[in-house]
Image 1 (cartoon, rainbow, N blue to C red):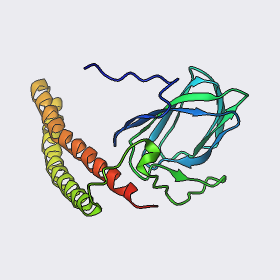
Image 2 (spheres, rainbow, N blue to C red):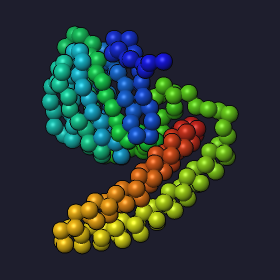
Image 3 (cartoon, helix red, strand yellow):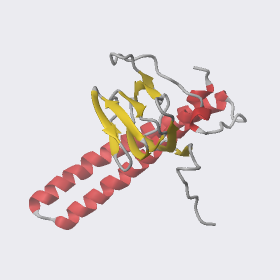
Length: 210
């Protein structure tokens, strides 16, 4: 069956949208700007493919061209402006991708109300056959499941963490390795549950108009 291959010259859209990451190719025209904003949770990576662009991130400004990359960390206000007479194309990713994905900012950097963009803004078609009531039920169940796993995980981290430190102090490498393994095996389902909660939330949140 193979796997999809994306080309920035033809696939100018979101190509992967999950709670863990949103990635896309973006084209902007000469002189075009993007409003100052930030992401409450997400780090955003920008890789310039064509053209030149000016980034302002957390009050500092840099000019980037093809092959150069920059990063706006979570909660850092940032904006972009295309330079010159040629369009600019970039690859960008935001991780994690959890609604509301954008917090607009004033020119002075003050936070404005969150922007709950519709799913279509990210090239995602919502499943309208699932009612809001059903999504709320799933949201509650996912949150409860996460709480249960987190409680179990906390107990294991405490117990195995003690074993780990004791084993290291006593030079017992195998016991330390086993304790680390147990800690990870308890942590892994928590992260899976966080992703499942984010998936339901990303279906529910955009169903409201704003």
